[in-house]
Length: 53
Image (cartoon, rainbow, N blue to C red):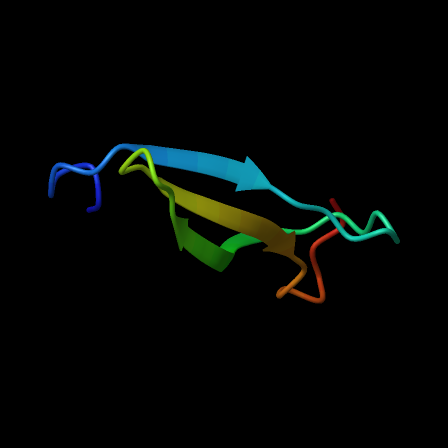
């Protein structure tokens, strides 16, 4: 949606130190950069207890 609105988007993945596999990506932080780009930091969470990874 951001790209459709004309923004340049940078996606950065962050991970848990525990290294647990997940099944659902969620944005955990957003930041407007001086360059006019939007940085989205996302993490993958385990939201399905039956997910085996």
